[in-house]
Length: 323
Ligand SMILES: Cc1ncc(COP(=O)(O)O)c(C=O)c1O
Picture 1 (cartoon, protein in one colour):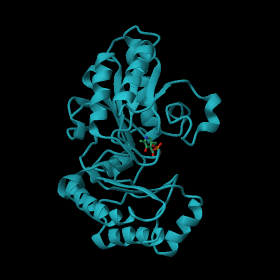
Picture 2 (tube, rainbow, N blue to C red):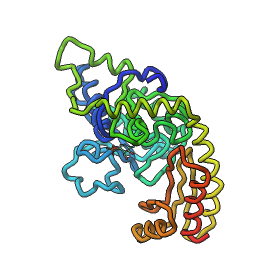
Picture 3 (cartoon, helix red, strand yellow):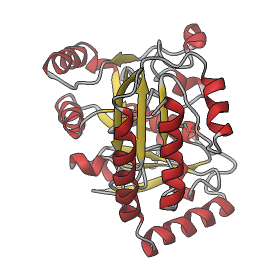
Picture 4 (cartoon, rainbow, N blue to C red):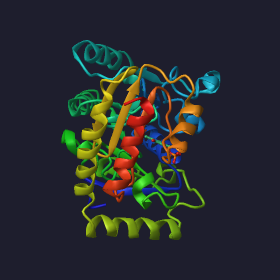
């Protein structure tokens, strides 16, 4: 894990992103328990957030806008806050922390981009605010980089753009280049130390059958080798230049609310999409697989996409949206 910043060096493998987040939550809770603090079992998560589909992770997704509101009554209660993006929301965030710190194990966030929430971007200073607040209130900071990790936002990890190191980070998806199910929850040394004990009760009680399964690990090693031998971040910068140039033309189209790009993510946000299925069919009819959701049409291409293929996708978006 020499690619990661700071002393993020203790790796726990699982087989899906959701389970990696569950392990991060368990780690944060047990970090407290092992230090004799029984009451700090909640997470502070954010509106617009998405962290998985299992029962524990559904409870830290956006409770209203997320896809899990049906399960509301069955989910554990956590603290869900607006992201501290400006003075007013930062004040609100600090007052929630003041109120709840005694019961919080960790703050959890998708850094820079809330993906399933609608590709919502926030600036790096938000992460610096979270790091400072976590330190001030002695709460762990978990960054869920399952979507953002391995170059998607333009740096290898999104947290590097803010110059911060989380206490725990979760990775999956691009860990194997998207070829096999593998995820990792990686903790800093001080988190690991809270588990290092002769008391078996202090061990992290989690053991998925397929954790670190050899086939998935071979895929991860092969993909990581390619990160070293091929210019992945340059590819991302090239994709960003094309996405920005091509999608910007959508800004003036009727019904378009925003156009934004970050790394290899390009988003055209519409006022509304009334029929996403039929919009998707229209893209397919134009020879492009684009999956609109919520009120966005977006692209997150493979970093190895050719310029022609990428321009075919962006031009199809412009055509379909009425350029
Ligand atoms: C930020 C984030 N966290 C967690 C998950 C859940 O990962 P998985 O689908 O592998 O369970 C996802 C998946 O989209 C994600 O984007």
